[in-house]
Length: 306
Image (cartoon, rainbow, N blue to C red; front, side, top):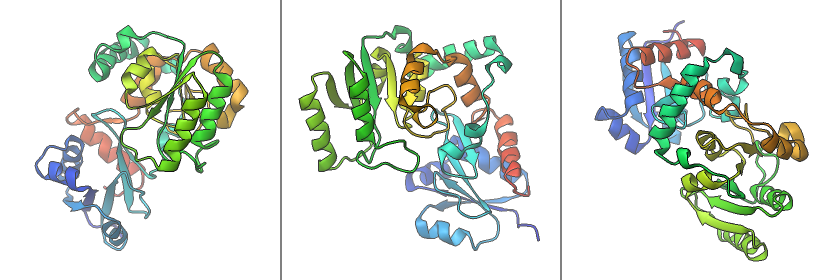
């Protein structure tokens, strides 16, 4: 028995208001695409209970960021930079379809990639990338839960910092705290001890763009700072799993010795990779007509009857 033509989009309070006012570009594209396919589209307040109830409802569900835990649900997530978005059958970035795909640089048109790269590095970061330099500094981009080793990580963030200290030589080490994270007293005390005992180390909150402009390379679990660093032509080492791993040495795959050697010996194909990862493997919400077609095709690919 086929599902009725109903799509419910679950959004947080702020995004729900924007969508109802017609200010959520990707949400507008999804709504238009499904309405033109004969669906009734409902915008709903997201909550644990609302998502749980969606499993028993007929029709399809689209969750913003949250896990699509039943067969009639999918996840939508910004692909790091507006207006690029993804629709996936999982909320785990390292399981996204692009994460499982092979990056083949020889298949990418170099002129298209270079033009796109030149325009987008100015659009996202203004003049910073054009002034990029290497100043003998390693940028360690942190996220949250510094003392724990999670399932997608090769070691805890604090242990990762320890490895950076052991391998940095005479380079300076800038540890960047995420401005959106709330760090515990235990975590802050641990960072203070590291900073007090190692004259190479500075801890700061935010300041990512300037750090990317001046660092030699980035070390992180799976922070998007590593991907942003590609716009500055700065390589990165990953201590965790993510969807943008293709041109970055991963500790889980190579081990520390090889990964640290590769980050300086093997230059990524910055222009082609960003063009492939973002423009060729995501949905650009401001492409009228094209975006709607990609949205429906992606949902059909994941088994929705449209």
